[in-house]
Amino acid sequence: MFRIGFGYDVHRLVPERKLILGGVEIPFAKGLEGHSDADVLIHAVIDALLGALALGDIGSHFPDTDPAYAGIDSRVLLREVFELVRKQGYQLQNLDCTVCASQPKLQRYILQMRENLALDLQCQTGDISVKATTEEGLGVSGGGEGIACHCVLLLEKA
Image 1 (cartoon, rainbow, N blue to C red):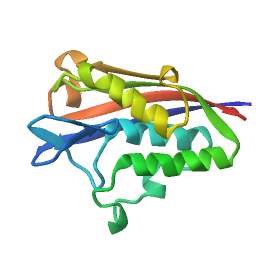
Image 2 (image 1 turned 120 degrees about the vertical axis):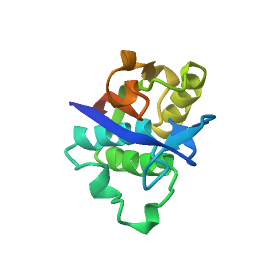
Image 3 (image 1 turned 90 degrees about the horizontal axis):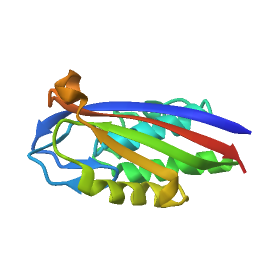
Image 4 (image 1 turned 120 degrees about the horizontal axis):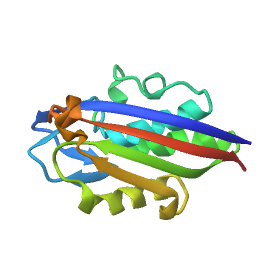
């Protein structure tokens, strides 16, 4: 039995925050605003995992009103959600992500993002795709106001 999940997240870029994407700290003048570390890539993956199994969304599991999640590493949240997936008897077959950002350029960080996701999702790096696009200057991410991420994944009953 297969289940497909789709995830999306977007956060505003602000000064005086670290930029974390896929668990990688990227040198940049701005970071993403949010209650946790605001890692849009991992947040989109979490929503895709939860959505594939009709388990709600990231906000229902980790509300931004709970001080326990203030500044938390999103990889911790991802591992917790993936444990829910495993308890339901599913494993990840593949994950495809597109990060939408006009700046900074992400190509040199993508392999580490893929490796982080593969480690947390207990699969091979080859099962994880992360791409980046600038959106040609359009929209929130294209205009440099924020960064967004779309992803789709396939789960299989183990």
